[in-house]
Length: 544
Image 1 (spheres, one colour):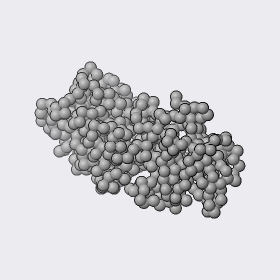
Image 2 (cartoon, rainbow, N blue to C red):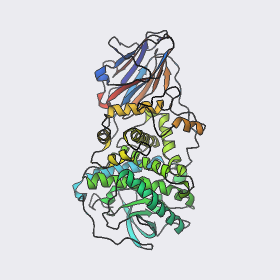
Image 3 (cartoon, one colour):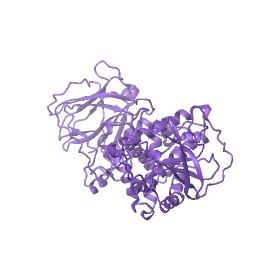
Image 4 (tube, helix red, strand yellow):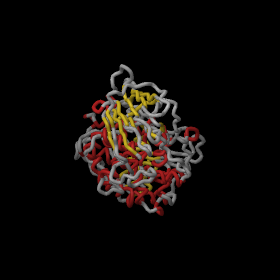
């Protein structure tokens, strides 16, 4: 455990000042114009900063201690901290009760499962025993036709350390996809009409969206199509979903694109991803045909991004699989692209925003914004796959695309660059943007509160989302905006928490008219070394 961060506030103003005294005699004075932003390295600029006395109209600043460490570790880079001060009232975050939050979302267990797959991919991609050469293609296979039968290996445990053979038949075949259904799937499943429609949607919409945004998939099996296997073996990975409200909708596993070996016994040596099937009469995990069908498009476009990413990073360029946090952010970004580009009439429910956004990205993002201090952006290796992490991953990629892509609405110029490389994670982001991670993370975290904040309009800065107005979205759904900073005059303030990689604590410092100077100190505690392992930064912006 790293030494604790201590953030203490004291004031020379008229407030009670009954918090812990801090020594800020060497504080660096920070006089900011309205809208001005500074990102300070406490080890260089000093861990204690001073805000000048407020004028006759008062002043307001947003203060943010944030961890900017971008490396993935097993348990995540984090450090506890304390903000000490007076008894100034702190605003509590409003509970989120939203029509955007469906009863049956992509679950926590599914997140952990996908995180495990991404970690396994990274390990396998570094194993020379399972490597394919960049140009390796298996002997040419005739493209499948409707009625073609084949047998595939499918994960039989949530750790994907055992596999079961699944005999399946091609029920719909397009130019780019062949949809197989398990021969032992429960009755009352997908109709041929359903499957033909989703195959056409993949050919005409999902495939071009993903390949334009991220690049091309491999074709190691030489059959010219991506295989989708819809099987009750996926349902079985969520055996009690009626109770847990937790269901794995589908997955891609990079092991299928690597050679079989003792370390990789389940490879199908094919471009394949997997999805669930309807099972309406299952008393433990009842999946209706409507539910299953409505989730297929989002599952397809999400998992296909993972397939493209693995090909581009590992097979084409010989690197490692992408870090989970960025990989998932890009797959959730793919879902957003689908919602923006596909006509409603072509989506299963007739509402593409619902099918691709309202049951995933948007509620996940709002859940994250309720407590951005409480969750990682840079997901650790032992993550349980929280929905809030997925929300953070999507928001960060969305913000990057808003500011570092020439095609600012879609952002695909940036996403193609992020996938077409052997760099991963924060190093990948820094190489593509030309900006340090220790600058990007604080700017993004500030944006999460400042974007479209009434009275704060900074169109020439990166402190905004160009393509979303989440405050208006909250209003449209009769919700409060979920990110509610603590609010204090700076005259003694108390908060205890943990900074996690990519996380921070938003604090509004509101100085009344003619209020005196405010000193803010960030340290490792009395006598403790400064916890540089989390790459802390202090972000400060003047709001008024």
